[in-house]
Length: 107
Length: 336
Image: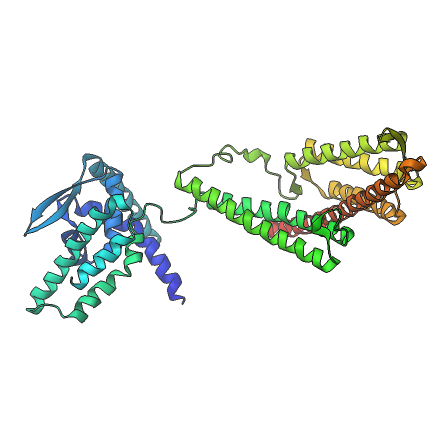
């Protein structure tokens, strides 16, 4: 089997799931590092090069809001869902559950 | 300055000015938080090698910075089919035909540098220049098309031309290939123009003036010999274009008719080519030399035009045969 093909398909599969996972995790406030760690602890590794650009994109789409605050002697940027983000998250979650149920029946 | 600082400076260098500080501050916090956590786990400070390993996992600074850029692809999947189509049309229907025409002109006018410096030198040199010009044309075409589509992508322009397509316009399987109306209209205009031009040319040998002296423009006898077959073949072309307009798909019957018309047109063009001399400029002795030069160039131009017509007609015939074969093969696959 072609490992490059598998990797490419795996990335494709993960892309949408990562957005959903980040939105889910940001129902509670997090800063970048704790968000990444929380996701990793739950089994979803995501590197900075993917996470931070994703956070910026979601913020530019008004799904997230962020603010710089000092914690532990360092300035950190805290993220949380906006009301729009919550709405979209609910709809995406319903969509994902539907797909998951269909897939369960298919495979 | 430790390795993390050096990494952050390097990342910063590749970021747009307006987002540099924001991104680097956040990345700095993330890297330092992870390094500190590792140190807590190990109960000691990280060695230079361990720190380097941690940074290496993040990727090259330039690569890391590039992920923050707003545009991650030059031409996205929505525009890519249009981009590929535009390139195909431009390369195969503009650059390639121009190269063939240029090649034909080069072959005929080689050695006539006084007419244009492009034609100086032997045929090989002129061919070399033609190929070079074609290559440059192809590169410019690809480059400019890519830039245009990259700008459309950047500006998030959406092409809606094909959104309102009509499924009823699709030909039924077995009814042959669809002929675009633009192609039929173009063929009709070309055929009618040739028809009008041909009738006019044979009926009225014209009189032109050179330095106020009359020069008689006399068409050669070959035009009279092929006049009626020529008229019939071009009229066949007009009829074919009209059929295509009314019923825009080529059945086997219509394709056969198209091949007969093309074959007749090719035969006439070949007969005309064999004549070798098509017009004569008759003039008084005071402008005889100029009339002779004009006659030479007029005949050369007609020669080129006939060669181009022959190439286009033969290519069109081969294309029609290929499309007919493919259409049949597709129908067989469909039927299975």
